[in-house]
Amino acid sequence: MKEVALQRIFYGALGVLALAGFGVGLAAAGAQGLAFALFAVMTLGGGAMCIWERSVVRSAFALMATFTGIAGLFVLLEADFLAMAQILIYVGGILALLLFAVMLTPPDLGERRLGRILAATVLVGGATFFLGLDVSRTANWFVRGAPLDGRAEGDFGSAERIGVGFLALDQYVVAFELAAVVLTVALVAAVYIARRKKSDLEPEVTQQEPA
Amino acid sequence: MGLGAYVAVSAVLFALGLIAILARRNVIYILMGIEMILNAANLNFVAFNRFGSMKLDGQMFAIFTIILAAAEAAVALAIVLNVFYLFDSIKPSEADLLRE
Image (cartoon, rainbow over all chains, first blue to last red; front, side):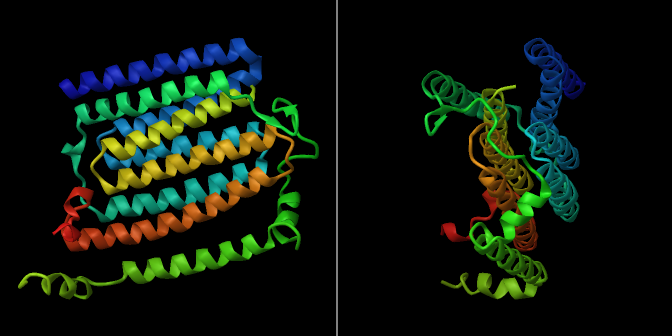
């Protein structure tokens, strides 16, 4: 009963904020602003739902909205290859891994504490608000004397240019190979760690007890 | 939409990730909060790349962040499974063998 009321309050507030965001976006920049508001609401609403929901599975699926909204914002920023990579890797890969972690561990439905969420929100939200206020008042972002409000030269985000950037000897080839090595080592190590049995872990623990 | 709007969305997403880490006593939520924080950083990289006069450096940074996030998620899943085997719980406050 109380839970239902809480859900109504949360989702009502979320819906009102989303509608306000759509209105502000539409008033500020027309159709582009509306698209931006849509993806921003997806991103932030998903994040808020992830924190709010009691069940971990629901939180994981709320996180899917966040990742998809970020991909949409990447499209608006003319980074189309990155948007595709975001959907493939985050929604297809990392979220699936998270769901495996959810399924292999026990659910803990009584773990959400409203007081804790409120305290963290007040603490982090207040810090973010005042820091953002300060930054928006004082910072002006310039690059080589030009204000950061136009688009840079060159076409953006095409997969071909990113591929050339990966493989050209004077750009990112070292970082690219290094990332490949790191990914291989990390995945092999993850498989090795995950396959250890309980009997492999316990001797280190029980040796501590006599002392 | 200007640079400020994207930076604002990124800042709020970062705050949400931090709240997820602080508010929920569950390793899975800590992982989710880390993913949100990484996504917020990525959004900043791509936004500054779009509005600044650099070529593709921001997007390249974002791609490497995504690669490392994938590796981190795999290793984190393995660690969560081990913690669960060892402690029969995935609350970070109960994994306290090193405290004594």
